[in-house]
Length: 332
Ligand SMILES: Nc1ncnc2c1ncn2[C@@H]1O[C@H](COP(=O)(O)OP(=O)(O)OP(=O)(O)O)[C@@H](O)[C@H]1O
Ligand SMILES: N[C@@H](CCO)C(=O)O
Image 1 (cartoon, rainbow, N blue to C red):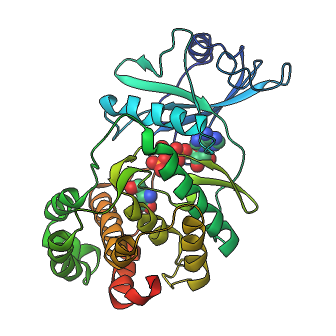
Image 2: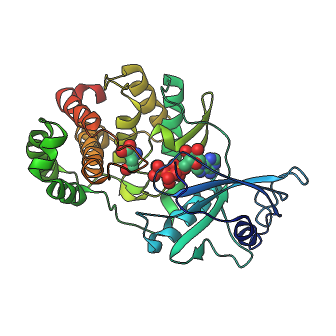
């Protein structure tokens, strides 16, 4: 479930009339996703009409309407939405933001923001193949290169200081309630990661959350990179580490060496890693695993029992952290 707000037909049609996209034909709530309300819209217009004329007259057009419900600060929206436009203009497979007739990137409904973005085809894979991981690695590197001249900057709100804040907010008892091992893992590993976190690796715009559910694919082709709402400026190789944690293990947290090799090869076919970046990957992987262990632990302890969403298990990333620590040679 992810439609938290009801928008009536008349209101939806009036909203869409602010854009040069034709008139509304249908609007369907999208079940996937947990943070925002999303609708799939069909209109009588052309895709991207009024921007570059792409699309086919008479064929109708399809869009995603997102209402930002939680977590996203309004002041960050221009960064996220103009980043989509910047990357799309450079040929990255990301949805363009549809601007309204006055050029605005987003609309307000009460205190909530809404944005209309381009619909992209494709599905999210559950068990990626090596070929799919190679393609994702290549697109991630292309994203890093394409964003090199993006003029805006945003600090990583999910960096080391946030892992520490979340760990403290969960407390030793809370972590131990989730799993008897978790409190010990955090007590041992978090101070070490914080003390050794690299400060001088190449940085730029990163996606920071490129899990399979944020990638749309058709066979081995990436058709969409979506959900840029953690994007920020940080270490580029950390983004590869995040993607590695998310793609290179099976559901039982067993490492998948072929998928790992393909992801890194795909990345390096576009942007070869420096020796310093490659040497840092074992630590960056542990940090990426800690980031998701901590955000999930907080959600685990703070999601009401009757909530419509099931919190994700923090122990998956926690076990992957242990794997990276014990097996740094996988990145050699
Ligand atoms: N541009 C797009 N083109 C096609 N489908 C999209 C697009 N954007 C989103 N979707 C669909 O909507 C679903 C939810 O989107 P998204 O993951 O951005 O939601 P969210 O609530 O912000 O995410 P999260 O659960 O990661 O916080 C996606 O799984 C995908 O199926
Ligand atoms: N992709 C994240 C959710 C966003 O922080 C996870 O799987 O935990």
